[in-house]
Each structure stands twice: as structure tokens, then as C-alpha cells.
Amino acid sequence: MYALIERESGQIVGFCGLVHPSGRVDPEIKYALHPNQWGKGLATEAAKGLISFAESIGIRKIIATVHPSNDSSKRVLIKAGMTQCGGSLQKCDGSEDLLFYWSPALPMK
Image 1: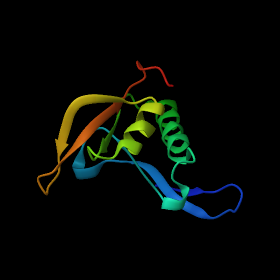
Image 2 (image 1 turned 90 degrees about the vertical axis):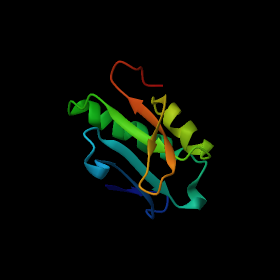
Image 3 (image 1 turned 60 degrees about the horizontal axis):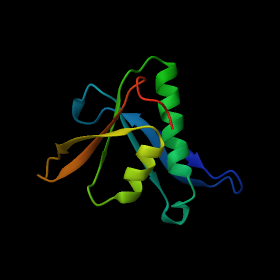
Image 4 (image 1 turned 135 degrees about the vertical axis):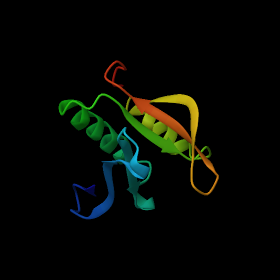
């Protein structure tokens, strides 16, 4: 995981990274920002950076999961070059998240 630092203030405003939750094979993008940073494009910039890094080291597929009601995160992932699979991923509490993916065959936006 990486700290997200606001350029102007030098303050940590969130984090991002590629993880393998629950032993999944494909790496998953995770990010979170302080609410006062929402809507500034930082999450999209972080997601694009993670995808670029992953591609540079030969990773061929990345996933991301989003709560169905989180329209902001859905837009972030689409702007970063990910595509919604149409499927979902069941969590241990029984709820489901939408599943997004990226591969080099998909053009970055």
C-alpha cells in the first residue's frame, strides 16, 4: 500500500495499492481518501498510476470491487480504464460487490 500525499500541503490524504484479498490470484486495486479530498480526481489518478505500474511489471489482469451504490467509485474505475464485468463477488457477510477488471487489451482512458 502507498500513502497518497497532497502536493500542496504535503499531508497524507489517503492510501492506495494492489492487494490479494482472500488469497485471490488476481491483484485488486484498493484505495481510500479522506472525504475532504473527494471529487478532486485523486482516486482516478491513483488508480491509473497503479494500473500503469502493474502493466510495467507484467501484470496482465487487475480486478476491483465496488459496493453497488457507490457511483463515485464506479466512475473512478471506468475513468482509470477498468470495465465492469457484469458479475459480482460475494463477501463473507453475504453481501455482494460489483466486479470490475482491467487487462492490457483494454485501452487506458
